[in-house]
Amino acid sequence: RKVPGKGLGLFAKSRIKQGDVIYDGNHGGHVHFHSGHDFRHYIHTLPDNYMQCLVLQCSAVESLSKEDPRSAAYLALDMDDGCFANAADDDEVPNVDSTHHEDDCNDLCDYARRDIRKGEEMLWSYGEYVYPWSWFNL
Image (cartoon, rainbow, N blue to C red; front, side, top):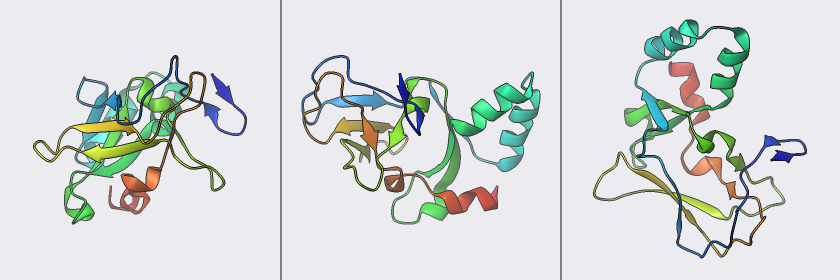
């Protein structure tokens, strides 16, 4: 639903317990582009400016390596509800934690940091996995 100043957001349909998986990016909705050329080619295949802008809004540069993020950066496009994940504002505390699995670094799962009430907006900390500087390298 709409969130003033943020657009659309994700809200809990029911109570979520601390530690529960909220989002698993390994189910087909999380698309990776490993080169700027491939991403730009995809953008230009879209039918109109509205779709192109929507895809840009749902995209972010992420990394498969927390130790050396620049070495494993890729452009991620959420083509599912993950597109509507909002960042916590400066006066808010994120209630969702993004963590790479140790056994398979391609899995991106998001967990409840604390209990989340029914109807409460789920908020992420984009700084945990988004690397805005990398847009310049694409």
